[in-house]
Amino acid sequence: MSDEPAALARISLDAVRHNTQLLRRRAGRADVMAVVKADGYGHGAVPVARAALAAGATWLGTATIDEALRLRGAGIGAPVLSWLNGPGSAWQTAIAHDVDLSAGDTALLAEIGRAAIRAGTTARVHLKVDTGLGRGGCPLAQWPALVDAALKGEADGTLRVAGLWSHLGSADDPHDPRCLAQLDLFRAAAEFAGRAGVRGAVRHLANSAATLTLPEACFDLVRPGIALYGLWPEEPLTAADLRPAMSLRARLTQVKRVPAGQGVSYGHAYRTARDSRLALVPLGYADGVPRAAGNTAPVWVSGTWHRIAGRVCMDQFVLDLGDTPAAPGDEVVLFGAGLDGEPTLAEWVRRLGTIANEIVVGIGARVTRVYTGQP
Ligand SMILES: *Cc1c(COP(=O)(O)O)cnc(C)c1O
Image 1 (spheres, rainbow, N blue to C red):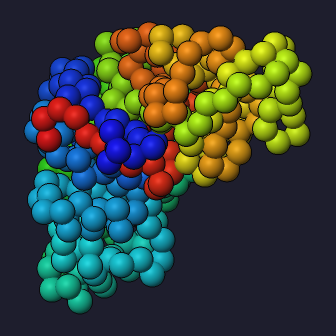
Image 2: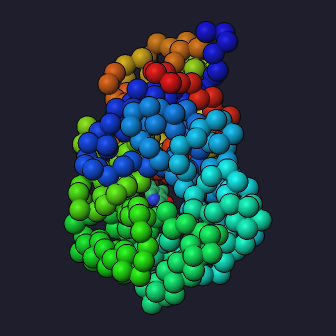
């Protein structure tokens, strides 16, 4: 125990594999791109990528080129797409490392083409169309010009159109009519590109929610993120038999008796109702425990839930254990898979009014990630 970190995120790679296999089945004939942006949603991009690839994912997805290069640096050779890069990005390095790139306008496409010439090879690009999200991607009115520019790049050998893609705006409810309208527009945009002469490009649209609930959105490739980690942005995590991969744990730093009426933590936002044991947990908002969890979120201590007492500080918070026996070094669980009775992230999400994504990506660098299961 002495060598164990005081606070850790235990990550089950078996859960990642299970979730990947489930997504693969749901994707039907489509391939699975495991989205490992933001350090694998806080779980560790490299171990998650390896587990997902071992379980049948064939692509990896990242926001930035840096994230993609980190996968290459770890020796991962699977196809990787990086989709969020602006003018002046490290295109040439990305191309030299076989990283697929997204382009949603002709200026960016031209930059990528020039970088391909410098790299002495062909850049693989995925043309992104905005089908209604109103975020990144090519407006429909400019889609013909983008497709035309990409075909010119194919003709002169600088570019290869490897993908056609878009992103859904309300996929948490894939039966939302806006989602179905995006589906139709995406199909039309891909057909347009095909008629114009684009051949062999993989079409991809679906995130986790669409993969699990909207088979017609799966096309050739799906891009699940949050579901790989066994989470669902807002609804109960039991949906679709996903297994939460992360469990956030800490060992009590101190336990002490205090009298009734003791104010607890900054501002005394909590006060003991009776003689109590206070326990100090070495995790705070610097570690990703939201400040909003003060007086709100549950923590599991030897079989029972205790609400966080008072404010969450930068590095620590306090629990009022009442008469519950506890000692420094005892393990507490903030959230986990729920199999031993500990709170799940879904419970935290319900009480805090946020989404699971925001909590897991916020778990700080100071929290050691410990992996269990097959790598
Ligand atoms: C983050 C992201 C995904 C994954 O979304 P989830 O809802 O987490 O499955 C897919 N595609 C793009 C473009 C993304 O940015």
